[in-house]
Image (cartoon, rainbow, N blue to C red; front, side):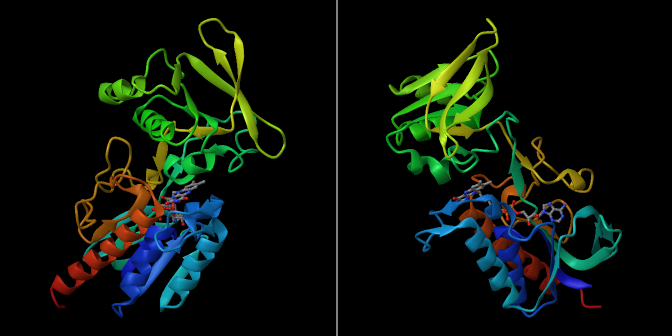
Length: 307
Ligand code: FAD
């Protein structure tokens, strides 16, 4: 068996693998798509000490760094079951194979919920974005929309209002769902409009970048156009944890519950990154949490009874 088996090959999983391997213990990584979300990212400008890089370059660097150590990489394999197996933990793969390990670090990440309207995928990274912390500064002095009036949408609108010229929030429901304190803050800002009962129907562009969007007023059925340069989609982040349901404690949003050491509710199983309850889904945070989970796994191993 492995000493540490990491499930997931994004920033959290790569950091966990490197930290585990540096302890000289048997380390493996199983990943559906090594690199994770950064493979879908154009520019990265907030990974501390790296002024500017591109997602594909960052992903290649993650892989090269892991390969610099003695780590078994099992790429293009999906884990679909986690089972406690005596002193070991068994990770069953969709292929039918199973891997056993004394500890496991879960780092399966998350994915943004899409609007699924025309133009959304065409203009992804050309004006359509899912991350205000990442892409807000790209829209300095421009008009943008935030889709979604929950906590993440309203937090994004407040954040963006300080950076961009103007923010329009579009909410499908007839009221905002964000906490009242956030709504109050939003209403105090001069450069934000809120449109309720608005169903976004299309992202419009000129072929190379976003120029606006279309929405339908759900009450009147009338279609409207907005001219803007950016669309921030904030309608939910879905953790990749469906395969863990029933195996360990998940939050109501499906995030893996972790404590300050990255421990989950299953002995010997740790978790890190966007798949967990740790707030603020960012690369630098995922990498830090991955390192922490691996150190916690190592701590667990050195305390285990000698057999
Ligand atoms: P992920 O990167 O999601 O990696 C998850 C890994 O697990 C992948 O290898 C995946 O294939 C694998 N996996 C999932 N399910 C399974 C399974 N069942 N079995 C096996 N493997 C599985 N953050 C920033 O800090 N700066 C930015 O500029 C930035 N820009 C972004 C732009 C875009 C378009 C997106 C989508 C995100 C951006 N983020 C940015 C967020 C950042 O990418 C994430 O916070 C970070 O990648 C999370 O790392 P992670 O390792 O937890 O998960």
